[in-house]
Image (cartoon, rainbow, N blue to C red; front, side):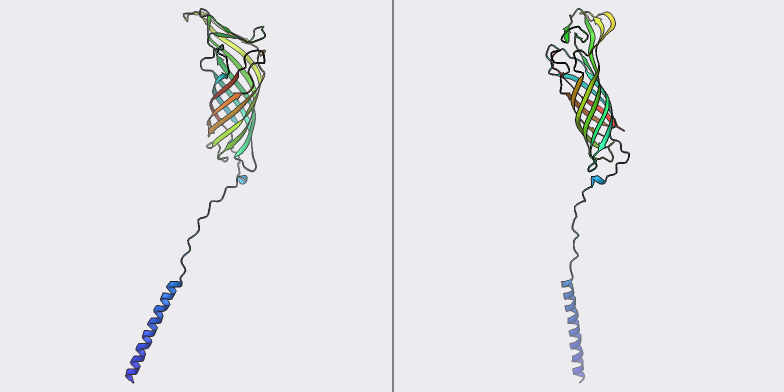
Length: 260
């Protein structure tokens, strides 16, 4: 009897151990793996909800450039550092759906200084055409220039990569300027002989718009990073009236400061 009792106890212990091991194996098999979270794409920015507040966006523009004339004939002796200076006050109108884009429009002054080598540009002469008169080596102006000044209306399409912080953003603009000539004058300074000696220390100035197209149209472009940038412009109509002289087309490029 005792022998059968011991045998039964051993059988029950073995059965319980085997059942526990089987349950453990089954549990390890059916245990689900921890799911790997899927990588989601970043949400696209809704530019229409950007709050611009009191951002700066090129309300003031200063430009300083090098000037010259395209298609000028060889008989016109342009030389030296021909320069321009432009200043504009502009309004900015951002697009509601995407304020990275905006339209800029304003008003300002544009000036151009073109220098000539031993040549007298007679803007006030009583003649049908503008004369670019050659001067002799024995008697000439040490410095001679033609100065034009315009009241200008610039209009441009703008793009700012960061419209909320335009004083540090890359900015691009293309557009046009319409200008109304305010004045045109020449200026000769110091008469010299062939040895470069001064024979007359005085300044001559003549003013007249008679030979010039008083309205100009120019294509413009500019690129800037923050307040510093570069610009270029090209006048698409001739500086001089038809039959008043050669068809020449002023252009300029240079640096600019913009902001506020």
